[in-house]
Image (cartoon, rainbow, N blue to C red; front, side, top):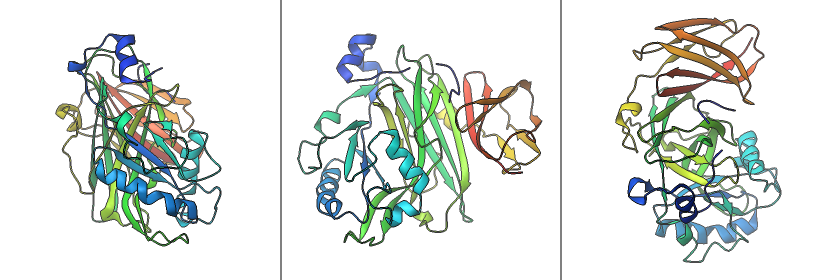
Length: 341
């Protein structure tokens, strides 16, 4: 799915610097992430996971996201509450079949010994030419909005990347059968495609691309514990270029330094779900081009030079999930859309 400008590769900080000749002083710290594939029915998980959680506590700079695939235990309650996204994220890495498994910055950790004090050492003190700003707004009626800004902070020759955006619950209190009473950082919903949507990276230092997602919380969530998380990865070996998360509160404060992009007015889509006509209304960013993509990345609509508002027919689009992209100058904003006839 291509949303804006152009295949990225990042094997290690050293190799990236050799390939691109980027000065480390112009880059920012890469926030490492551990994606943890576990299952509430898995007794091996119950015995191995505490060591991982102890390592995470000792390394607070490492982000953590737990995913609950349906194999080998399809009755896992946390999988059943979000089966499609959990299984799709697992299949994205080609590791469906057994738990526990651990991906560190997109690379599979061998075995299931998570207790080594040096587990996260290879992830620390790396730099990257990309930053992620992420903010969320939550309302009392269970609605949420998540905004992600991908920003280039240093010269680079990269083109496309995969951007995964999701919602996670910081602690879920449930005993699913293996004796674990609590489950940290549980993936509750993928806001993007679970394997990440292909985006064109900002080309020059200072350039940004904005992505926006909105929706309504599920009844089984503890909405007060929900936060937003984003992972930027290469399209080749899925190495992590940058990651970021909010806390569980509502905040418009950016994690990155790109205040301008983070605080830009959002555009509105209505109605959503749409069945016949869709209205796109921007909030003062000037004229814009409009593109709609299906969930598999196919461009299904393109129109240019809209002013404050655009009204288009969506009657010919099949029911399903779409992305609407608004482009104005160097800024690109994306929101999700549901077509329901």
